[in-house]
Length: 264
Image 1 (spheres, rainbow, N blue to C red):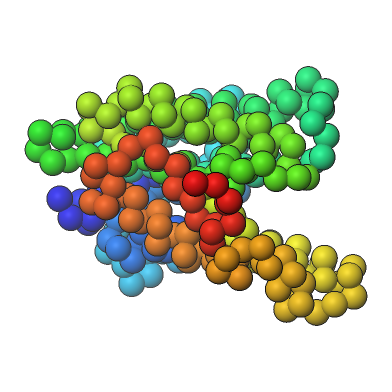
Image 2: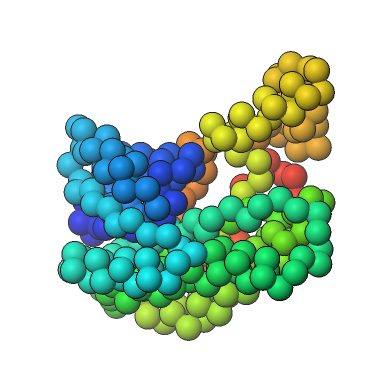
């Protein structure tokens, strides 16, 4: 089956990484269903993707922290009557915090928006898949999180806990759905130079009274490749995990962090 016969759901589709993922998949011939909160941005993203490309591009707005919005998403997905061949799940970013013991309502809000809600979206996506491994037709799920799912980071106390939840869930899903031909892998990202991340680096440089280039060099000094990744590099890895590269891979956590994680 060629990519032109495949449809993939992409959540977080209007963010810096999401836009790069959508562009890469569209170039490779996939049809896409884009999901994010802002309807206007989704509509523009679909219009931009359609220019000069043969795939079909639709969107469904959803707020992954809001159950009625998730329910509406599920109904819209059913009405499209599509068979999904893949899903890229990008849970909302977990805010930086050094507080290892936040109050219960903080934990509840973060857990809802960054795990329970996205997991509900994934549940509905899997229901729209129809793999036939005996015929060589497989479905691929890629869950994109941060590098604190692989190594503890200071200033990311809640992320250190919650991103690891995705690793465990992906393992469980890999066992549950592997025989059915649905592959579930996670992608843990280090620093990635989206526009928002570049702006954050520039602000830190301003506060330190140094240049952007100096600050970037300081921040990547402990990365063996001496650089942060780019959204386009992430997109190429996601595309690989959707393709035949991962036909004998499931339940794996792939690191995309320039060698930053220091473990065997």
